Length: 265
Image (cartoon, rainbow, N blue to C red; front, side, top):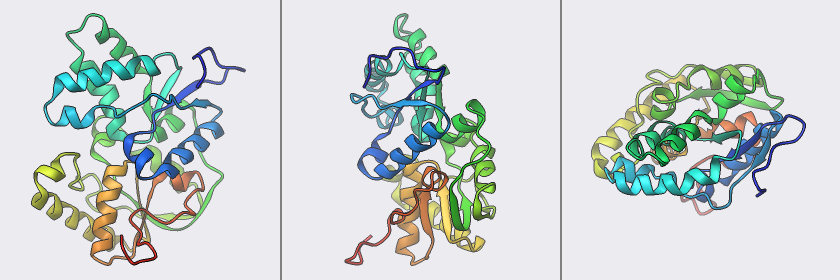
């Protein structure tokens, strides 16, 4: 990590907020995000002291604890030109909810707003901010795409990933029926209401199977783990990847929730 000084050659200095699930469950997504950002001409750094964004506390109604996490996170990222997140839900936490939980704090409120203004979901940053119109990677397969709730509704991520995917060599994309309907994950929702969550994800994977696609993509690890787990339990042979892995040409690893050599998923 540098001292947050200015970038060189006009290239923007970007802080990559990795997210908990990427760090602990699927580091390949973080490396894919890094590769894409560097291909987009960015100088990328990963602040080592970053932690959870505080979303579990916020979603549980623990606003004071969420605000405490925000106060710890803001100084780590506010010295960069941009903050990029390979997750709509964690990005939404910073963009929408940090200013909300710190709105009454005259010191931290303005800093939260400033950070929110330069924080972006990964694929929307590549297209909307950096002007990326295509990637060099190839993917041989038929994919369908699920819109995560926070990315779609809070950060307006919809056409950006589809635009990049549609230009990839070897890739065919088919629309997913009910693509904007929640998969049933919802952070703590799936823990509080497991029966409802299971019913929702069962409907979602049925729609995925209807498309005939061999690969399911999305931009949030929580949604991907939820859907991949259900697909695996129902014996549906659909590979599941984060969209960054495919766009970066880094889908050579086993899909999410793929059974290990012992047959466990």
